[in-house]
Image (cartoon, rainbow, N blue to C red; front, side, top):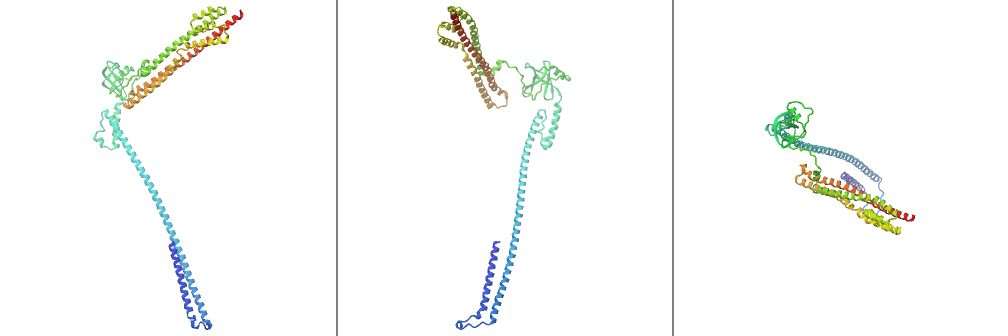
Length: 476
């Protein structure tokens, strides 16, 4: 566009220059005949003829008309070129818009193709997973049917079928097997009695989930004994087995349901206290020993405090009566005969009754402090045992968990029985530790409170004797 406008300007300028040149030449041609020569320049200018001025004017008018025509022609040409340029620009704009629309359409088509590709990939993954699931179903069905005598999966005819036909074939064979197993079946067989001996008789199977054994040595419901063998269950069901052998319907039907004959079913056994403690291992027995020691110390301290609390009242009554009578020597002998903490405190009080009251109180307090060692005997040790027992239980918990993780590391988690040993140590030791600590802690604090009350009673008894002495002395 700019190039065209530049070219148009150049053409306009050229035409204008050409017009001017043409006009100048024409003017020169018109004026050349009338120019004075050098010889005649000094002579007086003659008057131009009247016809020459009219010709020049006509020449200028003619030239002006020519230039006006040229100008209008150029203007028309410029307008025409502008119109053409606008039309071409409009065409170009329309073409650009069309191309942009085509680009957007192509982009949308590309997005749709991308979505279709992703959907196809997901469908391919789903088909692959479905295929794996289908293969797993075929393998499981083949294994199950093989146990019942139908080796269908490995046959060439079955392998030649398509998937839909294989499913239909398996469904039909499985339905026949289930129909055959849903009723009662009596077959000769052998099973183990409760004492472990093996006997032969008739085995009555209820589908594939229960069985009864009938023999001369024993009859009843059968339970899995491991390895496909069966044994008599502890539940007495001999009448049920014999009724089923006679094709009669027992009422009620005592049955033991099982999932598989490959895994042995063990009977529940009541665990004794010793077996329970023994499941906690060495730490369990150590906690029990600490508990026994704590119980012994508690009994000894309780017996000692019982004796001390009982003698306090008796000694105070006898000694107080003698003090009222003013016989301090006999009162002192009575204190020595009691041979107890209260007797020793009252003896120290009687020996110092003549001292001032403040000094006497110090002597009584010193005597009670001397007796505190006897009254607090075993108290701190009992509380220590109460604190150590749960710590040993925690130690057993950690030890048991370590044993459990060691077993998991070596054998994995497939057999829960292997894990039960470590778990028993962990839980039983915690239980034993708390069982020892809680009563020992409670009883230890109760005995400490009892000891403090006995000390208060001794102090009251000493104060009572002192008051009786001063009252008797004042009365006399």
